[in-house]
Length: 74
Image (cartoon, rainbow, N blue to C red; front, side, top):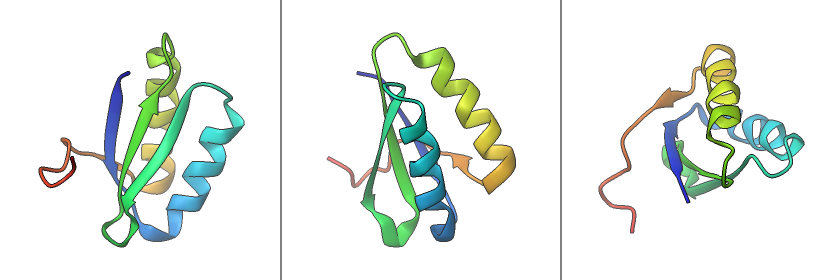
């Protein structure tokens, strides 16, 4: 399963989660340490293009920034 990682303003996490939930099966948002604003999207099989399109819009809208996988995440 593919993943995307982002840093996001803390006040935007719930909004991004709600948007992703509206696209059933595209991705699931995991916030391993919400205090740091780092999130992971677990991408549904075959949904990479849709996830990229949603991410592009949310990057522009929320200030979300793509990041590499945080080193301290297992």
